[in-house]
Image 1 (cartoon, rainbow, N blue to C red):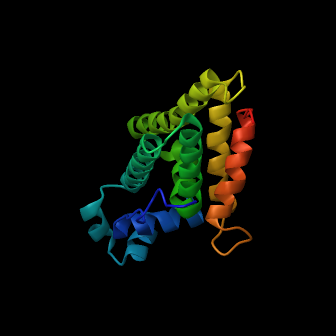
Image 2: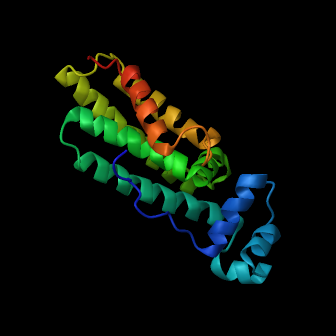
Image 3: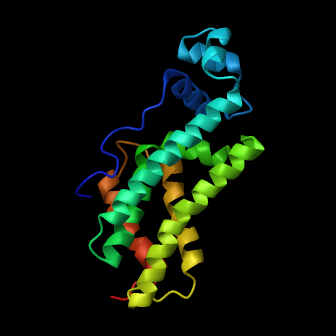
Length: 197
């Protein structure tokens, strides 16, 4: 990995940061608004001044994180010099997001069921569009003879879930750096698309 797809940390306000920590530890339904307020250094009315509900905090976490991910994926796609480079950059971007921002990646995926109906559909649509970046890259690779899969959409789905899984087990200071994980898992993802060497 020569350069980060996320040169700056994804920044949340104090309320969302507190909510993220609580949701990660206790789950959405296991977290009270009082716990979030306490973690944010606010009273409950003080928290309600910023967010009308616990659900609104989860919605904001989803909105900000997915907006940042889409921006990074667009930059990765548009900065590519070839179809294979585009595929590699997109996969690297997803891996980096799920390693570096594992807490919000995990919470926003695992708590999809906790979102209200409208925001839930918006979030699911946003995730479909993430998968579409990979589908398009694999489809282009098949057309060029770079990949030999007959199922670009299913391969893309598998790749996005491989990347998502990194959020569950990666920890800073572990056996591999983010750069090493990207190198290893990009090869695995190429193989999933049946890369023609």
